[in-house]
Amino acid sequence: THAPLAQVYCAFPTLSKIPPQIPSLQQLITIMTRVKRGVQASKRRKNLLKNTRGFQGVRNNKYRLAKEALMHAYKYAFRDRKKKKGAKRALWNVQINAALRPYGTSYSVFMGNLKKKNVALDRKILSDLAQHNAEIFEAVVKEAK
Image (cartoon, rainbow, N blue to C red; front, side):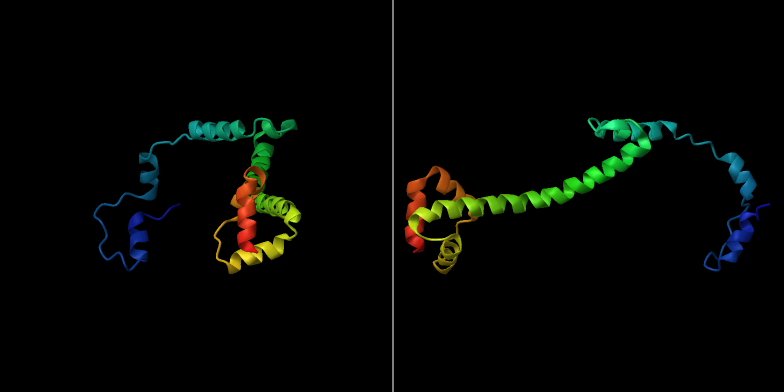
């Protein structure tokens, strides 16, 4: 049913030399040993189910549903790691703005003045100063005016 390998080699002109005494495809199949992959498959499934512990319903023990649930979980985790950075920045902005109000200035004016004066303090540091070191924050505000 299968062509001998010698005919396959002849079909490709790049293989100019045909190796001597090529066995037929049928002979090659009988020579190869059987590969059983149950161990690897079980290990892969077990590791996937280990990552779905705590999921609700059968999404933590049925392989097919668990795999789909885990793909979604990884997608959401990736997306929300990016969103978390934006949420932190927004929180810092609100905290800085709230700390600036007693000094009679707004967040946007303050940040614009900092840029003009080339003060290299980021929002995280400014927010921390506003909460924990009020006298240093006041000095920064006076510098920016």
